[in-house]
Length: 362
Image 1 (cartoon, rainbow, N blue to C red):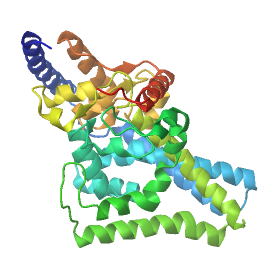
Image 2 (image 1 turned 90 degrees about the horizontal axis):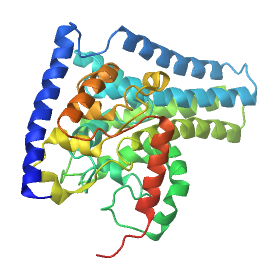
Image 3 (image 1 turned 120 degrees about the horizontal axis):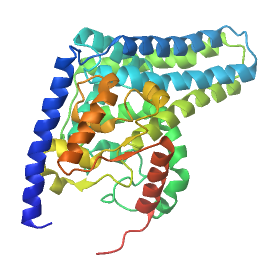
Image 4 (image 1 turned 180 degrees about the vertical axis):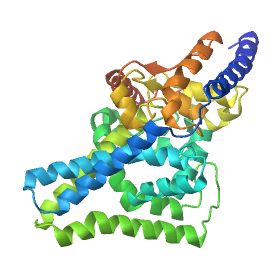
């Protein structure tokens, strides 16, 4: 890019940022709206929690046959994904409520599902949102050595087949999270841009305690109550996790590892583009008009708006997307999106295949 083009981008960046911030602020002021959850968001939260807890309670009654119990386990898995998308994610960003206490309470649903909210705030809120798609910093690009999610990552021969096994690997994500991921991060000294990290004893205790609660409700209680063999329980437990892991793993990848999004190295992260423009370059939306998907994934398909305004509740993202999209068009920036969920899946699959190919030596 020549210097004149760079100057044009810089001027457009300033105008884009000013217009987006002004228009978004006006949207809430003109309508006298809170940036936090509305009644619809609260009703959705109640429904998702009720369905998840209700399916678990029904399972424990022993009133169903093996196949019906397996179906209930799958429903619990879908519910866990919904809790992550539509309850905990907003709460842990401090976006669900103006009350820190309410956010902490709802955020604890994340811990009850087996993932540590404290560590999520570090790896997701702080690292991923600040260093999106920057190799060596963004932890979301290093989910497994079997997956190459950045063109700057080390290539291994097995990556040639990653487009064939990646979606199965995603299905294992909550299993890994519940059994290993948080423990690994707590003992890991270097994490993203942070070095020589230590964690307070209280956080260690909270992590271990919440993991124990998760193991009790998901493993101990069912084994004590259910009239099933150990292998039948194992099938149900795995079904729950494979369902939750697949949904969570796939949806999160569609936001940043698709054909249109940029990837950068740590060296490039300090360029002249503003942080908000960097989010536009590295993030993509999908299926904005799919109302059912919008409801379930809690705005995760509006990742552009989420990355620009992470402290605004996801219930507002459909409206804000029209503002951001118009401003991007007016100032010459691409608004990365796929019209349908299927198109986003296809783009991610092609990206996996591209990144899995052996890089050409420079």
